[in-house]
Length: 287
Image 1 (spheres, rainbow, N blue to C red):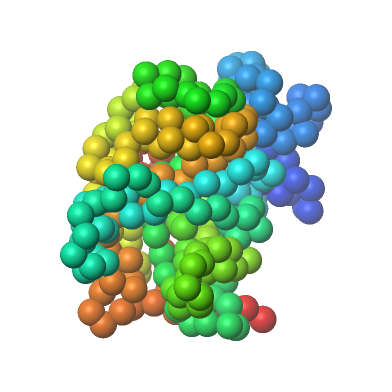
Image 2: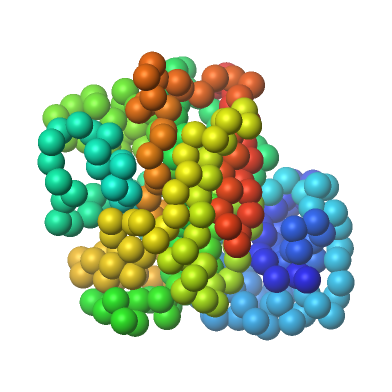
């Protein structure tokens, strides 16, 4: 069933459509009023698009398309840090879980799509992985209550929030540099429409490096559940359709292992989230 959305490139032309995970239905040539999936979500036209996909049938195998990040021109990308109990303990600073969440932002250029390589930059070899679930805002708002927060979610995807570890420690107060190297992270492979709180409140997150499980946890254990994230973030900024919240990673990132194990060219990283799928990326050095 064509029940997910995907952005992709065919012969250099950006396109969007629907997928069942194996096949793609091209929708951008049929719905030219929507240049990208962000336009679809802004107009709340997801159901219209999926209904058309069922009528058209599949256009191509998904393996024949270069998958891009699912929302190619997102708005704000706001990331939540230290959001699982063991992650807080990893810092070994003797502090209890903080009363408020840690936040930082990422640029769209810091992400690549499914099956494209994460790039280890020339500036550092400390490229690390962080498997997470990401939510796409479908209905904007400010001062959104927790009771109403889930009504503002349009879709879900998977994020490998790749981080250059030594570059988040370059100064007294910074995270931005180490979180925004070009193509250091990934999103994908597709967008799953949001329909049920269990999709985000009881989802397993598993990260594997070269088939070895490195991270494994469930969103039910988040220190700051997604309802709270939407409420807190919308206190200081207006959330808009096409904004993305990356909701936090479990313990087990390479920097926290003894000894640390950073990603190397040739490695394969898989982030699997129940109900969404698996995001897969290799590793290559910057040229």
